[in-house]
Image (cartoon, rainbow, N blue to C red):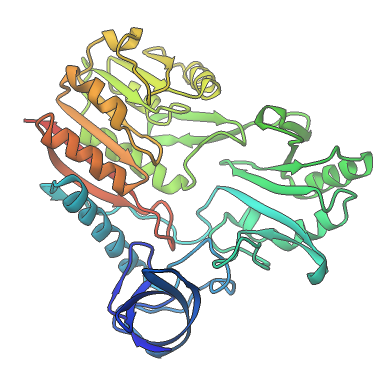
Length: 429
């Protein structure tokens, strides 16, 4: 079919109409005339992919990755980086308006960083495909659950993205070549680690091949025969992963399966921005919710009198405590709590907090927001990986608890994808 693209969806797909039915066309930009093929049909909409661009948008660029049309990891490589930022800002503002019924007083300049090789955390699929005569390593195809046949990845850190063929050959040489399900990737400032999820015990020969690969490349290798607690180091004898926050003289140690920000450059800009918005004073006590390893907690402690961090994952809290000790920071305390439940009777809720920072998962922080109302902090900074739940929670803060949405903006944590990371400042009126 030949259509003219009217607009762009939140997922970065072109929107057109055929016989009064909406069609979402992957790889198309607003204003373009394209030839597309159908890939999926539903009752209220269809999906398609571009076969040919007859009239190109001025925002169209040539994708850097040769696998862009097949791989589902990126969806916006055909769009200029400036236009990608505009799309993400528009999504954020639209969610604020329609979901939260709020409008920020000021739109913050976007936080941007490197466009390529930025991704330091990933979970790569692995599958031995006999029809292709090799083991596939990478991400899923855009339109199916199958792995894409790819040889490199431009958004992964080069220590990983340029080694997909190497990994394919390595796994293909193992006795367990059909029983390696995935590779968890974690790149620290000085080290690259890979956790091989093995569905069967590794033979001695397989272990020797993996260790030899580690010795050759310097990559730290782990195996994981069952759940996350079974992760075990294969090579070297000792492995330490960490990232530095030079502005605060902090070194954050983590394990390969721990949650850390995928984009170190944006993280190093995000933390100072959050602290700037909070305007921490030396006499203040700050609450850091969903604190993880202490990514915000420890920098906050460099500015505040006292910081309390709360996190639901007990293992992360233990690492957060160790990170505080490692960096000689003693004005922090950590607590384990499920922030989706009633926490009103917990010890840390009995304290007073001058300011609050929240960095929840995609589901947002709605449950705990209602319990925080009693603190009436002067400022609250909300870091979000989902503009829909941020907007929902912003509506609660503004329309129920009398806060004002002073500033908000996007952070390009995931270039070339439609993933929107954002930050917002709320002030008590």
